[in-house]
Length: 325
Image 1: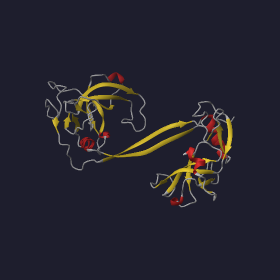
Image 2: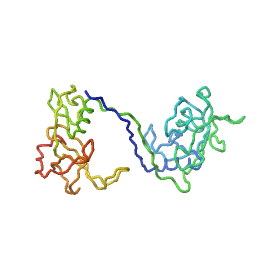
Image 3: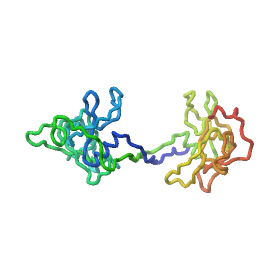
Image 4: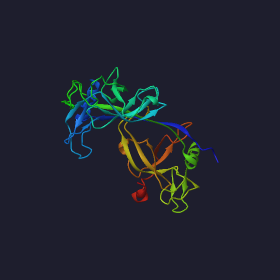
């Protein structure tokens, strides 16, 4: 049996979202070193603010300013920070209830060690030197001792008994953010898909047949998703197949050297009972259709088909592939 494959993989993409009036005010406020919360109809102050009351689901828009100081409600020590985390040295993740707030904000606490952190300790915001309207405008929290005679529950800059109302207006409001998402992991395809990948290197497509329902799954999963029994009988399928469904891609992906628009679709290879996906080329995108008969095209040295192209055969009848949509 060939060695089971494994490889490091990175899944990364930028997540772009627009901001409503509450989040826009909150993030713009951080840029201006102002922490805003939102007040519910029953008098609770929520920080970070939300647009709908988590208890009643009613819309809330009443913004208030809370203090940049607060109290740690719970914490966990992070002895090995990862890439992209707030601090590059060991730190504590903390939930901080800012003075004037009724809920806690999650962020990092810069402390010399876990022995220096405790529930109930007083902390304050350490602002980032350069701020752009993001949660990272709070660089972290740091330990803080209140001046003599100052109550820990005196919120706001002026020490008022209640958080001060705020109209949420600033110059050059932040209206959208881009949040990078990244996942680094080691993927092992397992016995069945390892055999599938090795076969692709020989320009063959191999699936596995369920001993119960007799369906052939490509790519193989090592077990039948319908019957729940292990599969081991290998079956070579294709190389030709039928395009069952497809989409036209009009947005160019980063680091992908394919001009838009292009077509990506599900292809039911002859002899398979599960459609796999692949790019369709060799035909104008507006002439691609369900039932199109296709075949794989390999590049020199490629370990998998680069794309699929029309075979020139008559289109498959819908009844022949309707169960594979």
